[in-house]
Image 1 (cartoon, rainbow, N blue to C red):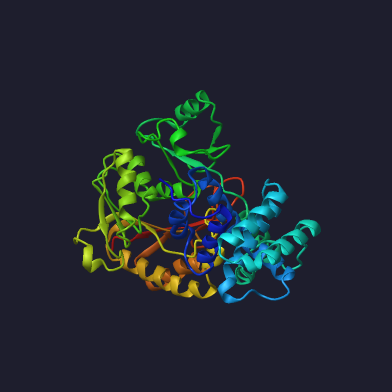
Image 2 (spheres, rainbow, N blue to C red):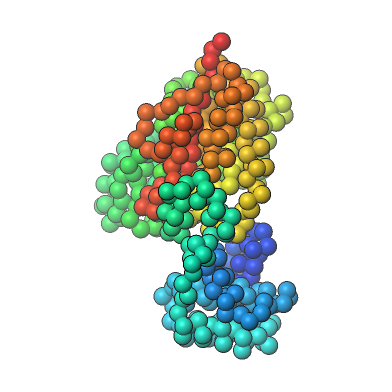
Length: 433
């Protein structure tokens, strides 16, 4: 039974405060969902995701409206007002209900002395409407460092990238072609009144017209279909898989790409899936079980090959490295609050280190696909350029594909509001000599 301890907005304010203090939504939300009524859980999730998505714009407005910042011990009320502002600006909720519930939440958070402030700020916000901001960081709701970096790296595209980050991502499926063709599954969807279209670039992808709970998808429980963005699905088209190969998925959790590899080629000798996080590997196992697939799972640091590698080289390696996740902000809007500019250089150091380690266990003549869900060149083609300069037996392959932009050392997909996430891929092969 759910212990309903606090009003919805009070719990949402506590989640947003936790995110600003460094917790991800995936860490802060699950325990919070237990503190609201069952029928409020989807609304809590929507409130938290929406407030994170528009945090910088809402925060800039609130700063204008507050004569002075709240005391440190009252910060949760600042976040309560952000949640209420999100509802006033972006939800269908009646304004009077937003104001009443915000005041009630203020009391529930044991701050009755601030109910007048909350009521006054929100009433003036309702009366005056949303202010216009000349600063793109506030208007397009991103941290300033991110705006500056995108503007520098993508002078012609930075505004469209920021806009795409604020749009809710579509729901995209990957059809398990071991069970059914994409055309036949599209027909199954149509038969139950679900609208979907074939993805332009991923050969087994379907984009739904509207997001749905997975249990309403025909055959989901039996492994007929999985949820995976179109850009992430492209890894299998680049690996050039053939029966008998030994394949490594480094940094594998939650397992979508591991499963896609196994689905796309029957008869692989072995697929090894590694992730540093022991807590995340059960998710990989669950996905494999649902799809009826087998892989060797290892909890290990992929880069510390001496601790886990059995000495048998791999024919194919998918290296989806830890990155800024700047290409998937629309799915994870808390990235705007969690990521710092100072994170990029240490991440680049991890990325080049992993690439060097994986190269040592790739068979001569083998192929490695380097992937990130980032749009920052420092994590993408510049890593590949650095690696090619230092590795004499590494050659860049230029895949013949219709997607992304040729960066000279790999291909970059920018987030598309109507389809795929932002992603980078580079394909390297190891010379036989």
